[in-house]
Length: 398
Ligand code: NAI
Ligand code: MG
Image (cartoon, rainbow, N blue to C red; front, side, top):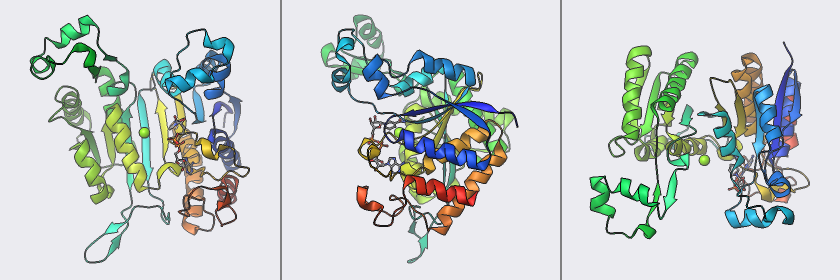
């Protein structure tokens, strides 16, 4: 096995502890790699006026694969106040380094698997026939377009004349909005390109094919958002017909999907959606399998091969300074397994997932979220496992 270099970006808050514990697990599993630390996050905003320094971009460009903990972001005013005094005169504007990473490297494919572990006390349960309790096992992978759509950032309040004039060429704008003064308008656009839409759809179908999923669901709203959602669904139909005839193509609306995911979550294999609906539906599914302590993700660019692997949770600042860390490292460990799959170390990924599954099924070592406790420093003395103990338990199984 050739030795790799992985860019390890702890970021802020609990990002560091979950990443450190995950690297311990990777080492114990026999993954041979060197780790170089990549600077990212609030600290670098405060001291350098840039939460995503160029040296970090260079490291990722060079080594291609990065593990990322989490960062802290704050609103505009708070970001300005946090800047060191000599930087405050420079007119710097804070923008999220996560969005920055996506845009810089064109990480347009975001993948968020949501799989239930047997024995996880946080698994979704529901009533079945009579008084029966059912625990549907979820195995759904959400593919979210990561760079366009409503999060593409093309938006205005009090739009410039040219934009306003363009809007006035649309009969629906004239009918519904032309009586509103321009200064009272806020406009956010939802732009889809054929290229990016095809890439996310193909990534979804390809994953279904490679991992044996029987259906791909486009989760949008084509009956109302006719142009963008409509285009995505139509392209999905064409791609399915031409290249994936053995995989079923389903079509759900995002609102209905949020209802169905508690009715029959076990039926959905791959879900593919634009940026915002993908964000929403993946949080919905994550809730069924244990929430933020379990939700992992990957973002990558199939052309360059650059991939960044991270838990979906944030920096949870209120837990960051606990003497003994209480947060669940599983979301970060699972994200590292996604990295291993991505670099074709599938056996190692399988081995770690099996160890995690055994720890969860056994139920002897559980972090505070799995014990359904409120997160406080005393959870450890009340029987919850620390972040380190969770990682130790996984390592012992390995
Ligand atoms: P958060 O995800 O950091 O924490 C929300 C709550 O979820 C925590 O208080 C805790 O109860 C629970 N939680 C999170 N991670 C957990 C874990 N590993 N184990 C057990 N419980 C866990 O979201 P919040 O509080 O809204 O944001 C905090 C900061 O993180 C903000 O500055 C925000 O901008 C940033 N953020 C960063 C993200 C990223 O780096 N990808 C994503 C979301 C938020
Ligand atoms: Mg989200």
